[in-house]
Length: 137
Image 1: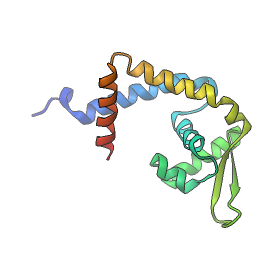
Image 2: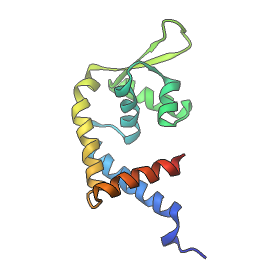
Image 3: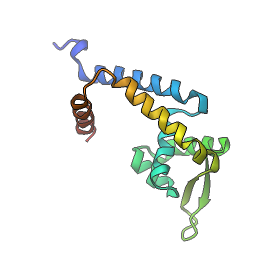
């Protein structure tokens, strides 16, 4: 029987907990959760996405996104507008607040990555990312 120490699901879960904890610490000054930051990252790549498109990009269902979006609108990070071509579709845009914090948020994410991967060589970092992508797929 496999030991829990060698159980890949357990190891990934514990690594996830540590990564989330480190990122939460770095985002605390902004009052953002890791999921809210991920939501904004999708808009950094392409502002004005529909809620459904954001969900596809960050792999979340629209019910989960609705709560995240509502809190982010209330906090002033994003604004929601009806699509001019289809009023049933909500488009999401970063606010000036989000735009002005983008550089600092990106630095927080980079600090998190660096902290978590500090003991890895460059080759190990590349392999680790590839392995995670392979598992995800």
